Amino acid sequence: MDISEFEKNSLANIIFRSSYVADDKKKKSNRSFVLGIDEAGRGPVLGPMVYSAFFCDEDHLSVLNDLGCADSKQLTEERRASIFAEYEKHKTYLGFVLKVLSPHMISTCMLRRKKYVAPTDAAMELIQSVLDQGINVKQVFVDTVGDPDKYANKIRARFSKLKVTVSKKADSLYPVVSASSICAKVVRDQIVQTWKIKEFDEEKQAMQFGSGYPGDPQTKRFLTEALDEIFGFPKFVRFSWSTASTIIENRCVKVTWDDDEDENVNTSTTKKRKSEVVENTTTTATTKTLFSYFAQKSTKKNETTTRRTSGSHYFRSACLKPAVFPM
Image (cartoon, rainbow, N blue to C red; front, top):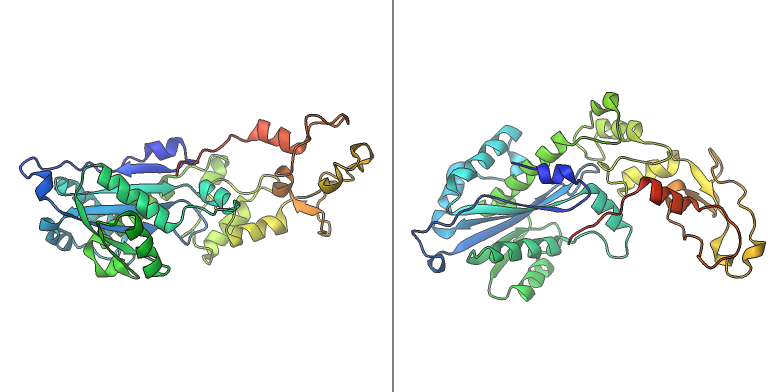
């Protein structure tokens, strides 16, 4: 599948659609579709998550069994890719819509009060996207890792005309969810395998990262070797995952700064920063990682105290580009 759009901007969330073309011989109003939703990449500390919505004409559901659609985790990588390629041959009565959530977006949103896109939000967005294509969806099957009833009720509240079934292990129970699972897994694997870590030099590009799961020894080794003590991890890594954040806390350079809580009392008496960068020091209440330091409040414009440009302002202007996360 052509993933060049995501490769151009791996900081953004991207929507991919199949080349579904409605069969003109059969009126749209006479066609009823079944929709299956699943995702891939929830657990890994590396790479994106991919949500998938796969739709199929009710009259052609048997094709999914003929293709061998089953839980993607039970199929080999080669078998998944083979089935995925076969979908194109049946594009007049089946197709899919995918949403790719970048690892940078996931990590950044984990630092917000509202966490990254909830499964129900992604599912409803994909359902709406399919409906907007004029596809007459009658029934939806969803794989869940949480409470099935809460998940189902939230979808029904928005799409009251749809018959919704949310179930654990739905990818092994319903072929349409199995087909969706294959889409998500194949596209995520393609993105991960072709990901070019721009923060690495040519020598590091060949570094192996394993499965991407936190418990994988090769993944752990990659995280250790990929870490920059100043700038942390490349954007391929979900730095908010506990495995990665622990490494940041233990190995990244520490910084100290004045307590900003007293800055409005008397800015002229603010204590001079004792040490901007302190390596291998004992962590105290006022010692944070460099990441936290760059997130501190910038100096107010109306302050008369002469101070050099804050580290936060310099870092952002010199090294960071604002990321936009379409929801």
